[in-house]
Length: 415
Image 1 (tube, rainbow, N blue to C red):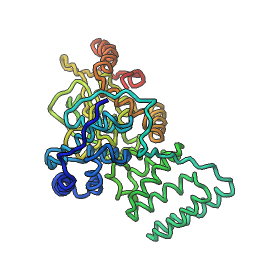
Image 2: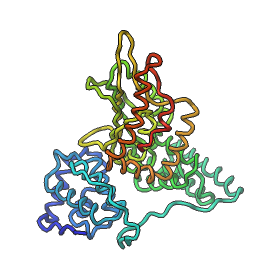
Image 3: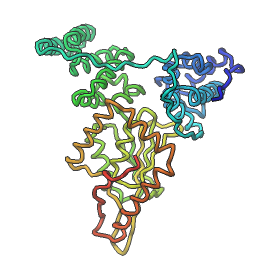
């Protein structure tokens, strides 16, 4: 496969200078990318020699937070060439991240064929999952007592002392979800970003229902305010700032209410709603890279056969935007819509919550589903459209005002 030549025309001085321009004009002052701009400049300049883990992190942060239309052209060009190199020459993970970033430039590339036999580059450090052994019952009891004392110190704002006690608790019971979560709280309160993120990742690696519930709790826990806009925090916890837009007016209000209920039951509390006069006959879910794993679940649960999913282009303060649309038929004094949105009864939600817990523990499968949908929309939505015709058949017959299509969320095979 062809390799791109090093950026011989882009000197380190130019790239670093561009990084300074980016910091002052291209990003918000508190953007996570701002903190990494100098290191990322070097990685973007020579991707073939860069540590791939850092290159992936930089490309992900840049794609999520960069405001392309006001970033210095030299930096923008370097980032674009680096992501092209990642797509063509990097690992499967690197190619997936680069593809998302290039999409924001208007470059649409297919999902690259997985390279199962490709040796991992020496600079690539694969993360080892946190999977310590179970503690004895006596150690668990002792750890719980020490951890509770540590949390009391956190509440009293004696954070360093509290973190020390929580570490002792982890030493006794390294799988204690309670201790792991709260040590993450402590590090966040101390504004120790890397340590806090690491312990949240450890919590996700455990893959238990309790660990998933605590990750969901972290989305709104005040102890994590410092990390709320961090891309890794969003990826690990599933936190997303969400906007839901009604594109069909009054007939769409029941669906918007159902979507809000769905999101609330899944633990998403940062949700806003709006209306638009621009009509849509099908929903669209727009997302930033950090919200990609959540998209796979939410798009399916919308209970509509023609859901489209696409990355967010350009600037947006939202991580996920749901544009609700559906076919509306007016005849005489009656109005009928083909779908009233998600089914939010407890039975359905229990299954949805279990799926969300699995996604939080192992997000890769959900992310791969989203990648396949984006890369092959014709194939994906052709099968979804055939399902849509079944809905439309019932819709045309008309069986009551605002007829609700039952069971479609389980049948949609587009994701």
